[in-house]
Length: 62
Image 1: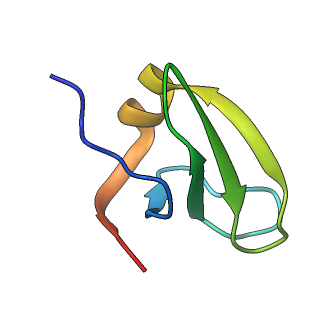
Image 2: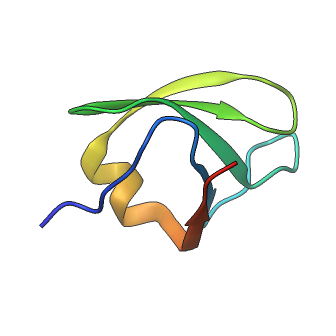
């Protein structure tokens, strides 16, 4: 069963981004996720399965 994510949630991933931040804001939800790095503002698209596998701990809504 997929984990319920919502647009605006902030998630922490297992690996850090090259800028040093590990927290990402969810901008788009679906088969692919659009995530925005909260350190440098870079946006990436990742498949849902990869995001679900790499989420560390809980998530927070703003």
